[in-house]
Structures are given as C-alpha cells and as structure tokens.
Length: 173
Image (cartoon, helix red, strand yellow):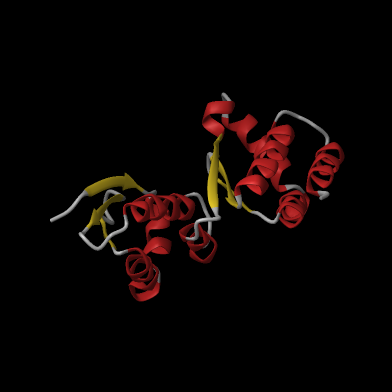
C-alpha cells in the first residue's frame, strides 16, 4: 500500500491513545489521513501513509503519540497537529543515575501540590507533563525553549524563586 513506520507506546497508555470506543485513534486518523494499527499486547504501533497522506502528518502523528505516551491528555497532544506547536521531551534517564535522584528532581519540577509546574505552564503558555522517566513540554517553539531551560535549571538545583524570575524576564516583551 504505502509507507509504514513503527513506534512503541507503554501498555498503560494504550487505552488513552485508543480512547473511549476508539474515538481518540479515529479522530487522529481522520485529521491526518494516517492509518494507525495498535498491538495492545506489545505496544507496537504501525503508522501507514497512503497516497492522500501529507508526509508531514506522519511526523505530527508520531509527536501526538509520543505526547500521549508521556502523560499528556489527548486534547493537549492534539495541539501538535497544528504547525505552531512543538513537543520537547527531557529524558531523565540521560540526566540522572538513580531512581531516588530522578524522583527528587521530578518533585522539584512539579512543586508542592503542582505549584511549580502550574506556574511555569501559566507564565510560558506551555503544557508540561512529568511522567515516569520523562518531562514533556508542548507549546510554541520559543515558549517551549524557555520552559525547557527553566526546567533544566530546576533539575540542576537552582532555587525556584530564581527560576521564576528568569522565566518572568524572558516573558516580558
């Protein structure tokens, strides 16, 4: 038929990708003209492009699936179908050696009762997901980079107040 591509999603996120009565998967297929086959046992996903598919849509579908796989809701992940939205993933496995360290740094990014994450989302206009071994950011390119830099500062130990000040200065036009 057409071009095929493969990726994987963790088994605990397959249901989110499929959605109630298959609605999420169906919506994604309709918006992109990309056929999505999901192996629920292995988490393997096959993306198939037909002659109607815009080649960019394969990349967009991959981004949406990646976003869902790292904890974003389908509603937030679908923003990646628009050209002005990007996904940046910070892989904590690459930055930290042990689970205790990862857990501590994720807690710094989230903050007490979600305060740090919520503040960064509000001031940068991004969406942030902290899930397992990854931190994902969705937004326009400039805002994603500001949020990623702020998260990097939190991960490396900068005080929250200093990080907030950095973000506020960057957001002033």
